Length: 222
Image (cartoon, rainbow, N blue to C red):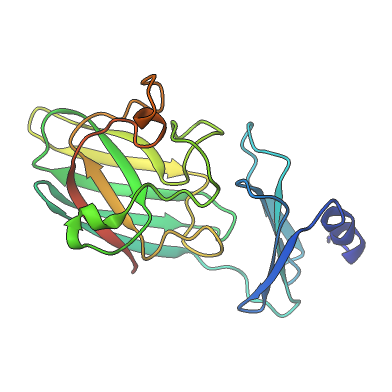
């Protein structure tokens, strides 16, 4: 069981912001995506995401002793446009656990297509009003495995000769609850391949030169 002393030692490193959200105290140490440490005193347990390239920034979630154990969260995206499909997002261990994105998208051209979570769930003007890639930590565009990436950077999906892409992605930054939640934002599928920030120009570090938006949908709780 983690003691209050341990928590105080960790937080004293340099906390700059503390907010209260639904009886959960969120502590963020820097404006960069953090290592997430989840302490649940109801279960006498703690867990953290441990990507090899994670920064020394720590996001601490402290729950009161009577907090119920976290339950899996699930969301659905219905994609519409030139292409269409349905995706299911599942986070088994919120808020620190990875999120799995599964489903299929049809009516694509064969080959690679950029696949991202965008800032807004506003599709009133079509996919164009979804804004840019979701990027709450002010990073450059990159590959999903890069430290320097937008939170919404999910790389490419691959459509087969019949124009169908089967999606099965697990990502450590995408979350369905807490400060990093993507619920209410939009998934966008692009016409071309994402160069993953390696295109050698300014646009590559913003959008990956993935081209137009051929499908989009809002992420909603299921």
